[in-house]
Amino acid sequence: MPAWLKDAVFYEIYPQSFKDTNGDGIGDIEGIIEKLDYVTSLGCNALWINPCFDSPFKDAGYDVRDYKKVAPRYGTNEDLYRLFAEAHKKGIHVLLDLVPGHTSEEHEWFLESKKADRNQYSDRYVWTGSAFQGIGGHPYIGGEADRDGCYMLNFFKCQPALNYGFLNRTEDWQMAPDEPACIETREAMKDIMRFWLDKGCDGFRVDMADSLVKEDDENKSATGAIWKEVREMLDNDYPEAALISEWSNPLLALKYGFHADFYLDHHGNGYNTLIRDNETPGGDHSFLKKDGNGDIIRFLNDYLPKYDKTSDVGYISFITCNHDTPRPRRTLSYEELKVAYAMFLTLPGVPFIYYGDEIGMRYLEDVHTKEGGYARTGSRTPMQWDNSANKGFSTAPADRLYLPVDPADDAPTVADQEKDPSSLLNTVKALTALRHNEPDLKADAEFEVVYAEKDEFPFVFKRGNLIIGVNPSEKKASATLPRKMEKVFEIGNVHLSDASLIMEPQSFCVLR
Ligand code: NOJ
Ligand code: CA
Image 1: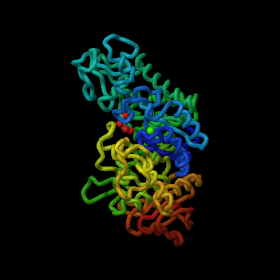
Image 2 (image 1 turned 180 degrees about the horizontal axis):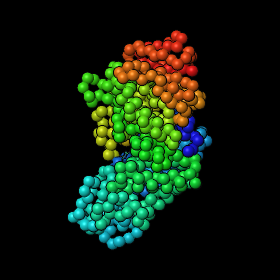
Image 3 (image 1 turned 180 degrees about the vertical axis):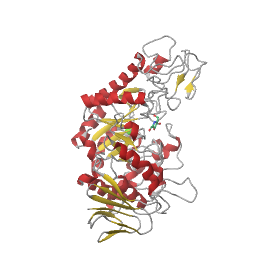
Image 4 (image 1 turned 90 degrees about the horizontal axis):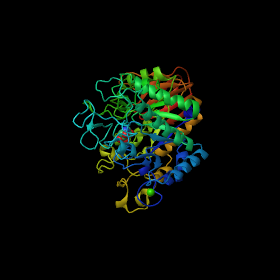
């Protein structure tokens, strides 16, 4: 386990939309380098950069055409190596995004694999034995290749599935995970990881980490065996490198070697019960909405068993959101966001802030889809730095931007919020500073629920010697403390008398 993860606060950067330095309307690596001091000012000491590799961008870069080449629109490989070096000088670790389950349909391996004549890449992807033989239970394409077969897709049409084999085989074209072609696929992925680690990258966020071996068992044991092998490679040769999964099943992901797994809005609904739970009748039931309709027990029922069974092997990563989900500002106000982020940044595990969430950027409801974004596009608009043209994102004409900037008159910016002591941005900074200063707020420090009652507030938990109180509701709430304590940090107003904690509406506190 890389020790630096204990004190890591990640910042996720969608490179397209972060900072454009050459005026072509799209963010670039140089822009990330320019903003490293901003990342530090935020209290973040690690980055996850969405795929920045050569790609036709039919899925925003999750359709990789060349794993070892930076997309020219972002710069060159040398620029990325320089980013690693500059980040390291400032104590920032950099994770790249590894997409192991599929490539672009334009990847050279796939172009070879499609050929009628057998070659080195014929079995790099999943193919049936005839163009008329489809694949039950999986999306596939037929009639597009000279090769007589259908190929399996892993996600969109542009993303053919790499061949890691099938655990349970029912067709003669399905290979076992230990057949030479499948071993070659995983060796190719390890080779890509080594390539970037040797250049200075600090690890990977792994896309669809559970999607490798098909017809796997319910514990994904064949896919898990591959990740164990990858972890072994890291432990032996890159012990400081981090591996973080998009799996959202820490019971499996951490057991198979990931250092951390994201707490996402799928596989159990704990995340949504906190910030966007408006699908059942009777208004919004999110715990972190001030309406007070939320129930912390619904979150704990999902989270606690996962935490209890994995806290000795790895971390669960809370996120403000990511490039696939609506921004939290869609459902929460600035004041609600302060309490929400305070909770995310004081729970155990390694937290992630998605660029722009620190100022409460909006989810833009009506932008046109871009690069396969569809409903996700509204969370991918340009970072709002200041009130100059294009909110300081780019000097290109507004109609040449990757995506439009938020047109609202009151669209938040970094520059405005830096000046306002009570802004969301300054609250986030205070929280990250607190987290770095308190040993009991590190990723692995002890966690225990102190007070959590159905439909009641506040939620009170313990981290080591600290007690944390969370009252997102617009009602005053109180709880009994284990002993007399003093305030270390507060949002809103919190009073202490003897061993009682009285929390005014929309407040948060850390006590010692
Ligand atoms: C998850 C990524 O986060 C998403 O953006 C992408 O479209 C799919 N995986 C497919 O790679
Ligand atoms: Ca640019």
